[in-house]
Image 1 (spheres, rainbow, N blue to C red):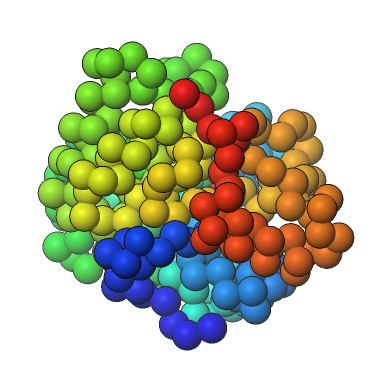
Image 2: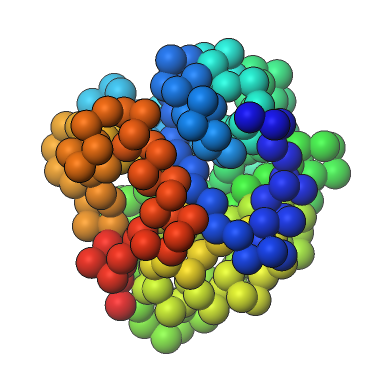
Length: 264
Ligand code: KIV
């Protein structure tokens, strides 16, 4: 696979080419993903749930993410590698800069932060200091205790408008990518059209520029349950390599996610 940069994804957005991405946590799977030409990998703080067996992402630390970032970078030298800033590791801009440096030194190309316009100053400071940022709006799992559960966000008119305003503010602050999680498809479509940066959806319908899945969901091996927005690609293909290839093809062809994997 040729080295992927943010410019690759920007060009794909401009060309209307959709792309599939996944989480990854270790070198072996990262290598498998790279062999299948997965352009972007995320070391998600979902590792708290799928690797550590926790009920939420809150217990994950910056050292956990740095460790798994090193592992994934070793297996996939060419992907655009995003690493999650875990809960309370970016409560202030200064703290965000210190912790982001740890992840960039571990091999990340970009860090991902959950939250709305309260992050404007933090994103400005990170990008001014050469740390690229991916924003994350909608169902932001670190806020599970504020939301009262893992619930779809942005169904009400005012909440939807808030997400649109936040997306524009974060892009203007310097965010170069946006993840939209569990929002109505129509809202995700509108935001994807309004922003010039690539938008990656999970539970956000088929009209975002890219899609992301937690790899355990793609293989149907998540311990507890399969989210509505996910699909077990292993069951119909029979091998992990074929499952990843099918996922990539279905996203590029606009077949996945279907309406059964999306929210109104
Ligand atoms: O932590 C994670 O895996 C994520 C994805 C679900 C986008 O943030």
